[in-house]
Image 1 (cartoon, rainbow, N blue to C red):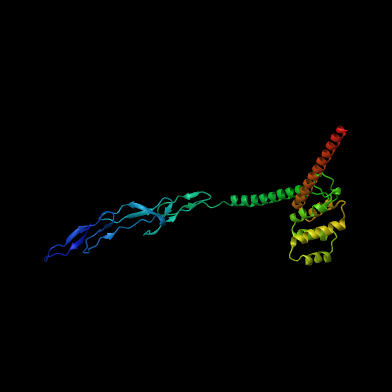
Image 2: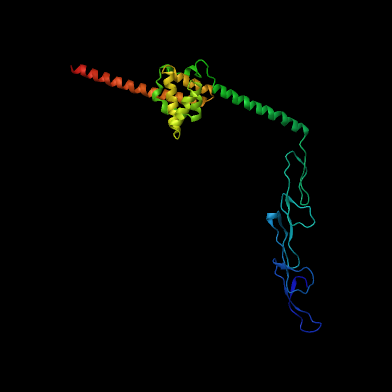
Length: 273
């Protein structure tokens, strides 16, 4: 019988077997049979895009359907596919049995993008170029970007006490490139390298010291900053300029404070006399 399973065989000829009902929601039978088992109810796998349309009963298996935004165009659906999302408009919406039909991108829209993208790229390149030029538009004669940035007289700066700080800011490649362009021979560069083969920090310091000794104090800071900008190390030149200015400002402040202390002492002694 439908909705039942055989429990015991019949005991007399022509008799009927003893039957038990199937478990509602767990198993079922939808036709007459002689099995001692009911059929297990099917599960609708949400991971495959399925959901329950009709629950399982004692006489009918579970009926599944595709979830919202899923479809299946097969006669027996074991899984559903996700509906396509259209970028340029919908011709026909997605249904339980068919995918979305999308509008194709118009040739006019494609042409517009082909025109817009190059313009945006060119505009970005121009912006970056202008920004770079503003950052590094040094006067070849002066080496300083703006007159108002010249807060100190670079020709009078003694770089010897700044060499180690400057070397820390520069890579070995940058130091070699700078000194090579400013009169230090390859022989000298190789000599310093071989003397300090495993100490790049010392190589940088000695290369800069050798250049400074050859150049002399006058305009050395000016030459250093201008030279770095010429080899496209503008940010580095600005950092070194800031370091020199800050150190010079601190030194000037210390000298001023010392002078004030001396004046105060002299005034005190004069008043005592």
